[in-house]
Amino acid sequence: MNNFIDIHNHTLPGLDDGARSVDQALSMLRIATGQGITEIIVTPHYRPDRYREKRKEYQKAFQALCLAASKALPGLKMYEGNEIYFFQDVIEELESGACRTLAGTDYVLIEFSTIQHYGYIKGAVELLTNEGYRPILAHVERYKSLNNNMERIAELVDLGALIQVNAHAVEDAGRLFKTSFVKQLLKGELVHFIATDAHDEDKRAPVLDGCEKRLKKWCRETYLRQITGGNQRLLLQNRYID
Image 1 (cartoon, rainbow, N blue to C red):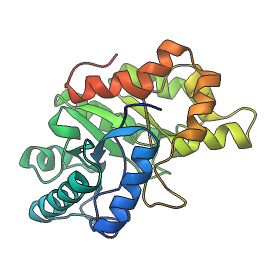
Image 2 (image 1 turned 90 degrees about the horizontal axis):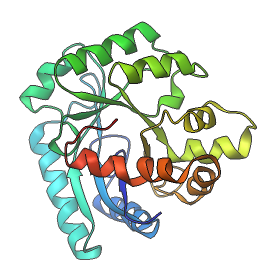
Image 3 (image 1 turned 180 degrees about the vertical axis):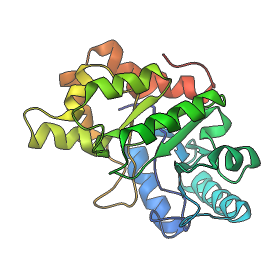
Image 4 (image 1 turned 90 degrees about the vertical axis):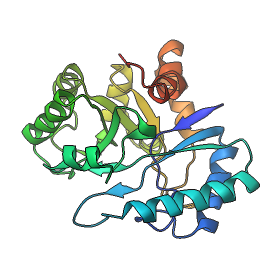
């Protein structure tokens, strides 16, 4: 893919289960740029019980990575963000700056326990949208209460949620299953974003090649452009995504 904007990855070093050092982060970024990724929103995990990093530590890590990347990979753009594990005080944490929206916009990347019940996820979407945020549900293919339930996905979208699917899940869906939830979502045009969710340079690397082949097979050209570029650009401009 060309000029791809990755809105979900764990490249920022030392803050979660992603990159452990600037050197490893640079290795991941080299893979990413080789895949056509030109802009990245770094999204380390944020949850009070595990990854509640101090703002100072985030800024230090971000500045160090930006400096290293500017020398090694000039032209690559990076923005701040978080993948936020939803909790009841999330609005207060967002407003205080303890956790971050994506690139300073109204869009928020949210995750849940894979076994979280549907009512809780729906309530989270309603809470965030009522407060003026646009929730993006991270790696939606993982949640058991949503799996193979297109009606629930459609209801969440109607409530204001946006749907993100991992690139590896798209690739695996094509290789392992004749019919899959991810394939259903794409054919139903209920996905708004493809992202790498990269954590390292090996098994969870920021690769898109296999995913791209499946997308070209399953998606209309106009829809493919939306989920691999158009929506990401609208997000960075803080514009409404339909």
